[in-house]
Image (cartoon, rainbow, N blue to C red; front, top):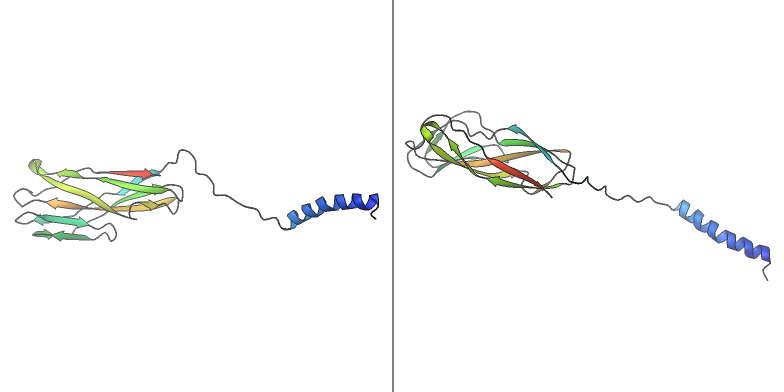
Length: 170
């Protein structure tokens, strides 16, 4: 038979053993930190999209392409590319790591001498859209295709324009 003292000791020993077990085998768990609301990103332009210097040839269907992955310039059709400065459009994106970002490109026209126009097809990015921000700052390069008309439709001179890229965070 158990004495009342033994029964009291057993009742006190069980909770004590449970507390001791929890203390010895305690492993802290951490959840992922919730992002601040609203999630926001900041985009700063570092470089413009520059197609460089070229001479338009005869005929139509000529294009100049700036590759967003390599920054290289290539052409299609009868056009002469001259050695000059070229560049992808480069942006510095500040976002919390893990932010999912999509890009939407909007084509535009470049305007030159005497109202001449060339079409700019904006597209392609490095990293490819959509992407996940891996650090506080992510560099995004954007390329494009410039549709050049014939020499008669594309007179010599500087062509300038603006294009828009929407950075959408999710």
